[in-house]
Image (tube, rainbow, N blue to C red; front, side, top):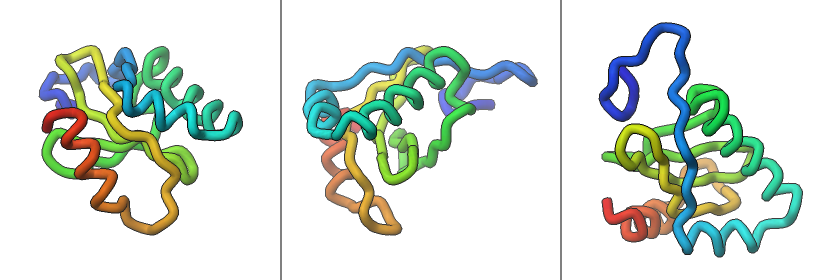
Length: 110
């Protein structure tokens, strides 16, 4: 069973459309080109190969993060085929700061 509650066939990856909120788009535009490219590669993998091909971590009820080096994209599932990214940031500490989790929950209405 996957994060959206569907039973996943063995060997089949779950592909999702990646959508960014207006807030996440602003966060994205603030990143340098190298960081943007890293996120683009991660989002492309989610859409074309499956979410299992990127590093993700649950951050509580209905909130997850995509991890690429020091970049984080906090997201929630929307239905069974879409993930919505609410916050993008450069992680500077071991633990994901509560201010980003709280901001993502507010934006994504979790």
